[in-house]
Image 1 (cartoon, protein in one colour):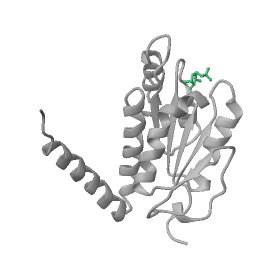
Image 2 (cartoon, protein in one colour; image 1 turned 90 degrees about the vertical axis):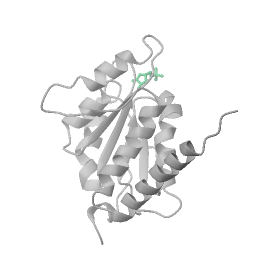
Image 3 (cartoon, helix red, strand yellow; image 1 turned 120 degrees about the vertical axis):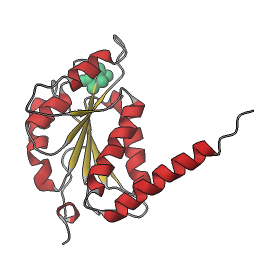
Image 4 (spheres, protein in one colour; image 1 turned 30 degrees about the vertical axis):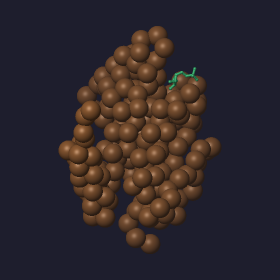
Amino acid sequence: MGRRGEKKSRSQGPGISASPGRRVSASPLVAVLMGSKSDWETMRAASETFKQFGVAHEAHVMSAHRTPSLASDFARNAESRGIEVIIAAAGGAAHLAGVIAAHTTLPVLGVPMKSDALNGLDSLLSTVQMPAGIPVGTLAIGKAGATNAALLAIAILANSRPELKEKLRAFRAGQEKKIRETKLD
Ligand code: RP5
């Protein structure tokens, strides 16, 4: 058995486990949580990014309000299951990331969902305005936030995984090349 994230880990609750291609680890290193299935359309972007990097992850629906015990139990058990970073997405009175962060010392990245009533401003403020002592690293509203939460999680994992750091550098170089080569009509 190698580093902590590579040990066998049981999946908890309903959800997906995905990591095709050249895997960085066999068992999930990141948990992507969302308050409702309606968030999945947006959070799929995080999952796609992890697949691109071969990072094993899992995704689950749980809510700070509708399933409070599931959320707190998940957060309490995540580290012992080999999870190293948690991404939590929610919309409206978006307390999921804060509640998860209250129950674990793992890094928690929050993604505010675009809401019908206030276009995600409510989600953003609910996620970002944590009182001092319990941090949530909050990303942008919506799909950009979902993608960047995955990239930030990958950067955290890459600190102890040179092969992942290399993939991150290659990704940035590819992105830069594409922009430099952009031709306008
Ligand atoms: C939040 O309420 C969810 O994260 C979602 O963004 C929002 C609406 O949920 P649904 O009513 O679509 O289930 O808890």
